[in-house]
Image (cartoon, rainbow, N blue to C red; front, side, top):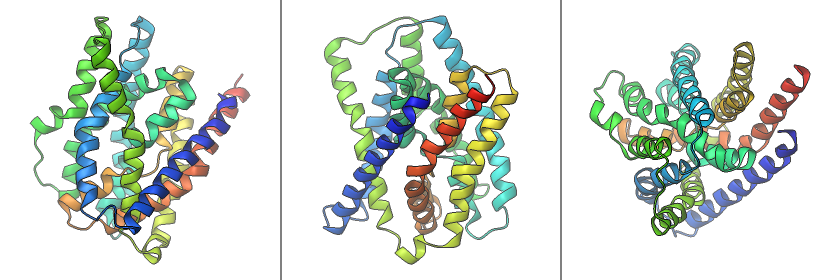
Length: 308
């Protein structure tokens, strides 16, 4: 994996440039503040599910299925443990709900998928879909509960949503070796590929919702240090103590190294009516991740080298 670190850095930098385009579009009033909700809805309900579905259209092998299921299980344990850790760290801090949400729910799909594609090729997207299977359910159960502090969330929506449905259908097609017709696959694949640039346009738009002074608060940098360095390092340490395959460890560390997800601001706007602190942590953690994601992958590679 060491040879891929420079490619990962280049990919993250490319995504950052896309984010700059989003910022420019907002500054020149191509986008408005309300554009975020419309674009986010398109991402969550159309392009991302199609990306997940087409990423699962690869040749079935028992090893791939076994590895994917292990990744899904590790993802479930990871997110629940992260919920407890975030509560311990931010439980009594101002804007604790947003900070906890941003810690637990990272940018796994919008930024995580492109990085996995660079590191692991098409198989990276396949495993990424298994990792986000639990994520898509948990964000609609615990995420909403967290932001509303006890408010009721819909179990139906938690399990029956575009991301989860696409994952389940994709896994079933994979297990039974059913391939989508070429015209349908090509159409879905092309639309799914829009997820990457579109998501960074959304993040760029979100950056403009926050002042420079608001972005540069100490809180945002402390959050970023925890999210981008402490959590992936802790994830790596725990994974190395367990009898896990190298691929599983690398997938989990990569996803753990992602910055706060754009969903942090979207859900905060919907359930707290104040997305300002969310925009701050998203902006700073995304900017800093340009350096920290390649760093964490390099550290992971070096750890495996030392262990032989």
